[in-house]
Length: 168
Image (cartoon, rainbow, N blue to C red):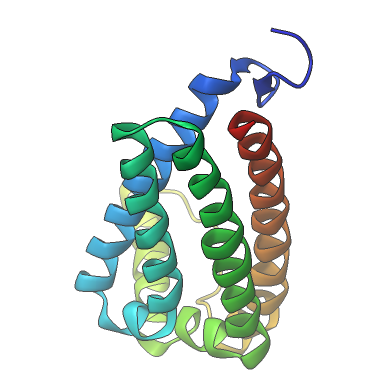
């Protein structure tokens, strides 16, 4: 393939888009399971889960009926659902503090500290880590989420470009 006819510089564009479709569907299933297991996660991130759920349905439609109009539907769907709704709502969750509040909840911090202790017990090594506090978590949490949101949006923009090339 010539430059521009690939996805991620190595896959033929058709294969890359199908792989993206499968990853989208699998991540939607995983997020749905996580939302069921952790209602606090669902309460914060349900619009993103729903957006990716709709995109997964669009991908299934495209896989079952691959023609020009279904490809254009996938392009528009990617623009609206993952890129605008997914990234936009994720940015809102971060800036409103809801993301850090979820990430740094007492239950999650307790789980982190238990994991650290378990690793030290299993390995017999002293990692020299102090227990994580809510303040520690919130200090680094927002910056980490902002970086994650920026990278996620850049990846979504790149995949929009790939889907655009594929849909023509």
